[in-house]
Image 1 (cartoon, rainbow, N blue to C red):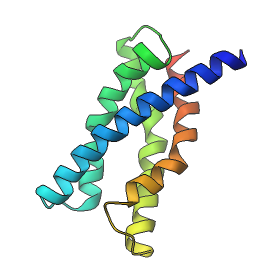
Image 2 (image 1 turned 135 degrees about the vertical axis):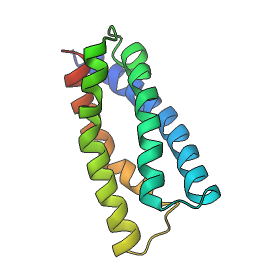
Image 3 (image 1 turned 120 degrees about the horizontal axis):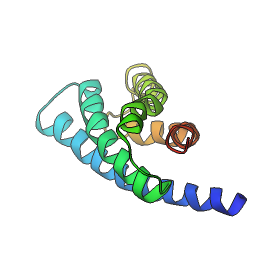
Amino acid sequence: MMNRINNEFTRFIIVGGLNTAHYYLIYLICYNLLSWHYLASHVIAFVVSMVISFFLNVYFTYRVKPTFAKFLQFPLTQLANVSLSSFLMFVFVDLLGWNGNAAPFAALFLTVPVTFLITGKILKK
């Protein structure tokens, strides 16, 4: 059981790395090239990344069959993530004066464990 959880978490981290890369690329395009507000850039990048994340997680991380019901429930797994990461970005950028390019990485370290637990519960049921 513990080995299975460790393997799932390792695959989750790999998928998370891929998700982070395409999220951050989209974020940088919206924020720097299009000059959108950092929170709008964050939400747009997050939504696109979430759709890709669903398919990577069902096929690679948890190795379960994707269903329309799971696809519809998957955003619920990300609700805590987007809420917490958006709040943290607000704190880091607006309250602490951090650079808008660095804030997503700081938020990431705090949201990954929460997202792993919630995602597993939804996709594996």
